Length: 206
Image (cartoon, rainbow, N blue to C red; front, side, top):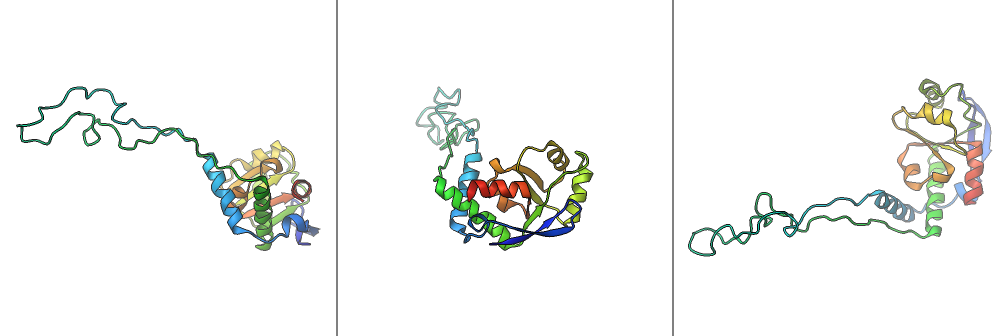
């Protein structure tokens, strides 16, 4: 059962916290994490890109010049792709980039991502994040106390004070256990949890 240090809001070590072996102590499966991250990024794409083909560009109904006798290459329309204002060859059209991933694979990837952070000593657990006011400088103090500059802060429940205090810090993002995803866990250098969020993660994924 993996153990990590438990800190108070001033950054002082107040003991250890035991993490669930079933969630934070699993073998790291990089292939599964890659599959889930690729799916996540694909699903973020809007797929609204669009350009017109030669059949959709207005104009070009008249043949520019006669077929033979001019010495120039034969042309049938001024809206062919080689012309200025012409259509686009194989023009991109709106499409759905969605990639579906099995639920069991998602759970396995999540456990692998959390376990990899524990293995690399990139998990910081606070007893609680009760900051005095929803101000950036208050959250900067908390992060400096544990020597962290870039991190993903995972909250058990919505906390407007922490969210507002973290919003303007570059490289720091807050999220809830319910919206936690593999991509963000791997993207940020450190994973900051509270005792409450650890309990909720273990409740969901154990």
